[in-house]
Length: 496
Ligand SMILES: Nc1ncnc2c1ncn2[C@@H]1O[C@H](COP(=O)(O)OP(=O)(O)O)[C@@H](O)[C@H]1O
Ligand SMILES: [Mg+2]
Image 1 (cartoon, rainbow, N blue to C red):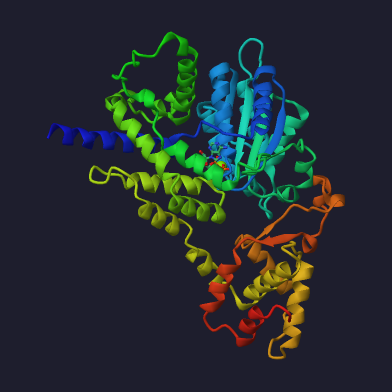
Image 2 (image 1 turned 60 degrees about the vertical axis):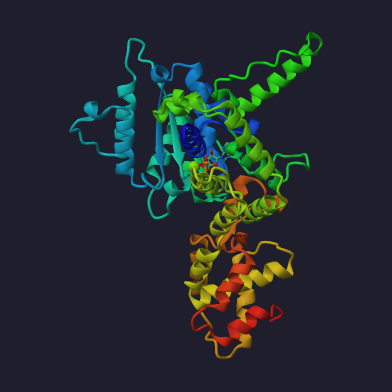
């Protein structure tokens, strides 16, 4: 009875630990060393030497942009007196699109609500200047360094509204009025083209790219290998949690000492790799002592379970499917979380079938198919035109003119189709961009390769690639309501 009770608490503790690890650790950052160093340099130089900098961190969703910044700030917090030397303001383009809301949040994060009081300001710049002046206090009127983190940076540059916030922030970094570091994160590679001229000219043009699996030169580190490694790393438990009651085996002779040390070192690094950083536990208000009641043997056999399951071909197949579908680590962590949640006293080990169905659910293409089916006939036709074009030209991206050309060729051969005016087609094309069914790609043409010139490419000539798998388009066409037969026919015959 006692044993049973104990195994119940053991598995519950383990589940709790793994859940926290998967959900809450936003401090530790792997790989991308040079990019991280770059960001570290910018922020620390702003804080320690009062320099002003600006940079954009660009990478797909879930590639670790936010985590990179968190890990850098966390490191700097341990090296410098952040509370006294700097003010960190975090804004998010999804929330603070409106300048007034942004200013309110800035004021609150600077803890200047009292100083502002009922004051009314004429312009955004006046208001911001007032805030900065408030900060210049003390005898030497030295300003604290400001670090602005603008998440979803592209959302701050919505057309139709002036980019006052960006202009004012970049203006300060540019004119070096006050020590300030402005860092934006975005998943839009074409973000520079969205900036107003006056904003652009004040930006440092520092771009830091984060692409998953990019810097890995050795062939061993295929996406699947990385995925397997992450699986092991996130789900393994650190042995150091348990009080080790199995003491060192006494029969190790002196001559083998060095070997023992090496083994011990390996275990230590593994342990820190598998453990949740202490700061994360503190932030979650979790008392780490509770995990001490985990038993050494229990953790050992759990880790052995992970090691063996990751060698199982069925699991490898599942992981491979997932890698093929996405590189978004956040989605992978969501899957891991569901796997961990399935653990229970009656089911203390993971089962491949469960994992497989969780992954199948995660990669289910249904929502993309639905999205495609919600398109207008014209929009769907453009998707088909792009798909054909990319099939013919080996996956080369296409611009609007090329798509229009293919589409016109098709509609001309079909007398029943009315000709659609060009602006309407362009509008439909832009809608596909908004829905992220097509995505802008980097201009690989060497003349256009620098960032200053891409801005000059007219929108009709910007290159796009399909962002949905062809299988989904197939699926969508199959179930499309009231799809004209000739479009169905066209879809199946790319020669047209
Ligand atoms: N290089 C990395 N090191 C550690 N964790 C990472 C890394 N890349 C992504 N992640 C994890 O993936 C998830 C998404 O990362 P996040 O920083 O939010 O991505 P982004 O801000 O680029 O959308 C986070 O939970 C993070 O822990
Ligand atoms: Mg982010």
